[in-house]
Amino acid sequence: MKGIQIISTGRALPKQVVTNDDLGRIVDTNDEWITTRTGIKTRYKCEDETCISLAVSAAKAAIDKAHIDKSEIGAVIVATTSSEYAFPSVACMVQKELGLDEEITAFDISSACTGFLHALAVGRALLGTMNKRYVLLVGSERMSSLLDYTDRSTCVLFGDGAGAAIIGASDNIYYQKSWARGNDEVLSCPGAGQGPSFLSMKGNDVFRFAVTVLKQAVDEALKEAGMTMDDIDYCVCHQANIRIIQHVQKQFVGNEHKFFANIDRYGNTSAASIPIAIDELMEAGKLKSGMKVICVGFGAGLTWSSVLFEL
Ligand SMILES: CC(C)(COP(=O)(O)OP(=O)(O)OC[C@H]1O[C@@H](n2cnc3c(N)ncnc32)[C@H](O)[C@@H]1OP(=O)(O)O)[C@@H](O)C(=O)NCCC(=O)NCCS
Image (cartoon, rainbow, N blue to C red; front, side, top):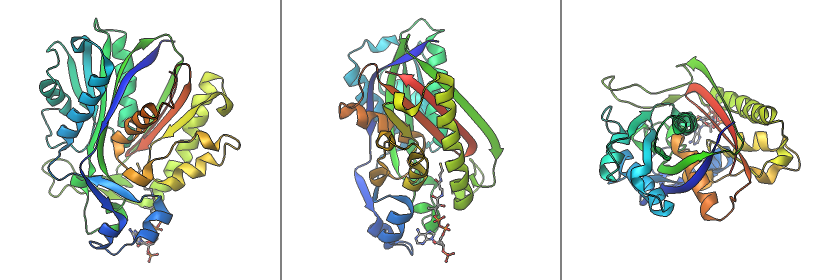
């Protein structure tokens, strides 16, 4: 089984930070409700930044740290559902803005909050087929452009941001499984030409879905690898709600500390949440060669995916 090596990571956030009190001035909500129900304290919101500019900045941060010949990047894959364009793809704009080689496979993946893990699955597969050494993966979202700021049940939950990773091939351990259960009733957003494109969600249904599949996905990853949580160094779950993470975390007694959380500062950044989390862990020097990490994504689709890999 051929795995990946993370060469470098990066992230980009808008300048504007929106607090729960700021939202309390727009809709009928307050810091106490948002904090206790979600764990979110602040989130970032674009002013002059865009989904594309965030993707470019996060990708540039990863490239600047990579110390590689960037003409060796053979693919750029951007996971997003909130681009300013239906087309061209964000990936093509990243190729242009960063002056990447024209001999490159560049495209976006639309898979909401699971998007970055689907990008990882495709990027890893491409590594085995192309004659270049690296794939650039990006998760970038301007979720604020999809939010109805009169709907307190959704507008408090999401944030804007982007994360990126450059991966190469390795012989390290890698197991990934993905699932889909088509459903446009509990979490959806109209597409181009369909009038106002605001996200709508049945929060309780999505919460029940999330806690069920998150535990299942972690268990499946461990089962595939023949490991237990004792063998794992970090578990990076999509950051949707701290209560979703805690629900699963408390089922792994003795290993609770391995579950990473930064939702308090970002809210739900959809496809960007996992690469932002990995970049934070990298920056803090917490991820080292040989460590084993589980990542789990879940969201609209409905889709979910878990990956267990060795660094
Ligand atoms: C959205 C979510 C936080 C709501 O939490 P909850 O505890 O289930 O709350 P409920 O939806 O039952 O609402 C409880 C009350 O709070 C109110 N409420 C909803 N949003 C509110 C807000 N921002 N501020 C204050 N009150 C709010 C509701 O109107 C309801 O009031 P009522 O009892 O008078 O009708 C929770 O369901 C959730 O996180 N779901 C998953 C969402 C998610 O992760 N989506 C992305 C997946 S990738």
